[in-house]
Each structure stands twice: as C-alpha cells, then as structure tokens.
Amino acid sequence: MRIGIDCGSLTVKGALLDDEGKVAASEHVVHEGEVLQTVRKVLFKLVDGNDRSEISVAFTGRHASGISAMLGIEPADPVAAEITGAKALFGRVNHIFHMGGSSVMLASLDSRGNLLDFTTNSACAAGTGSFLDEQAPRMGLSHEEANAIEPVASPPSVATRCA
Image (cartoon, rainbow, N blue to C red; front, side, top):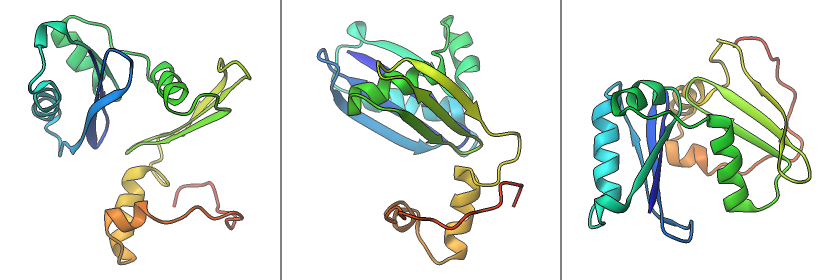
C-alpha cells in the first residue's frame, strides 16, 4: 500500500492506495498552523488496521520539504503528483487546474498526458482558496454550500489584478 500526503498552506490531505492503485481511504484536515501534528493524525488514521511495514509514503505541497527532510526522504514534485493523480482518476486530461490555499496552478498536457506548460500565480493571494474561503461566509455560504455551486458556462470576466 502507498500513502500520498499533500501538506498544503491550509490543509493536510492524504490518500491510501491499495495494491491496485485504487483509493482505499482518504483524509482532509485543516491544520491551523499545526502541520506536523496534523500530518501525524492523518497518517495514523490512514494506516489504522493496516500492516505498517508494507506502506510507503510520499509528501508533496507547501510544507512537504520540511517534513520530508525530517524523515530523510525527498518530497514528491507537486506538478508530477497532480498529473499522476489526474491520469489515475480521469484517464486522459488536457488541463489540470489546482486551487490551493495560497496559490493557483494550471498545467497543460499533450495528447499522451505529458506536461506541455505549467504556470502559477504571483505572490498575491486574491482568487486562491484561502481568499474564497474567507469570502463565502460574507455571502452567507458555508464551506459545503460554496463547494456545491455548479460551474457557470459563461462566467463574467474578472479583473486579474489583486482584489
């Protein structure tokens, strides 16, 4: 079994894959600045009831380098992890858009799923997950309600400078 942990700006997400590469369990926890403690909680929850000697772990995300260094391993490349995950979940994809707590990433892939181009936002956090999480309550929406909003076919244009 394999575990992938994304140690992001706001949350720690983990997935336990079985021998066939299928998601056997997953966790998503807001870390509130306690990244290491949250990683421990997520790991123990994912391995609960499994033979720990047969599990490999990889870390990616904003806080992955520090945690990986403590364990003496290399962090996984976040773009490569996104591509691998998207291929496993959806098969062929052309673009991957990832909105994190402090950044936005867009990867464009060729017809064989190889990386063509990659871009991320500047240091400005407007439009990122954290910004949107703070705006939802101002609009009277819970996190779940905001996530359930259906995509709009023709959204209005929005200025790309900082909000």
